[in-house]
Length: 255
Image 1 (cartoon, rainbow, N blue to C red):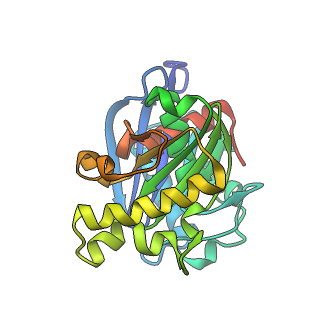
Image 2: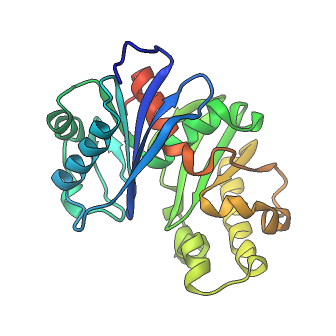
């Protein structure tokens, strides 16, 4: 598909620890155009192996326009400064140079995966995500975070690593911790509640938006939370990373 076919289309790729997913995105609605392609993340997930897989996904869509890519990394000046569930060789890698070489274009943007998902929620999710100081959280293998002020992103926050009662928040309150310890929603939501109370104490947000796969069952745990600001389930769920990546590329957002 050519980039001249429709100016309202974009392309996003979401790199995760288990899978790499990409799709063409309708930038007016946040919906996918055609099928999403998913390929298992290579093992080990080295920079070149991941870049080659991203290129395979782009070729599968015959896409020739701007490309947005998320990584489970802090991205500063287009250099990966951390690596979560991908090979440590990413640390210090110039991701723009890496993906430009693999994709044959410099029209790309690379950003943190939670930041991308947050951007998508601000654009296409619940109204609470667009106004005031908002903390967007993804509950999965860890706890990803994105912080916004009136819809403007403060990039590369890592609130999941904040130490609460002697342990990192994500070690006790991620959905992976729930599964690992076989916690009921009631017991797990108490841990999430403790984390949100600490975030509220430190940052005084106007709302929390909670995403990740477990947000599909928000009715089982969000009502148990006792923070006195709204806690809203993310609307885009597993689409958010791809949509946010496409937005970053089209709007030239690159930390």
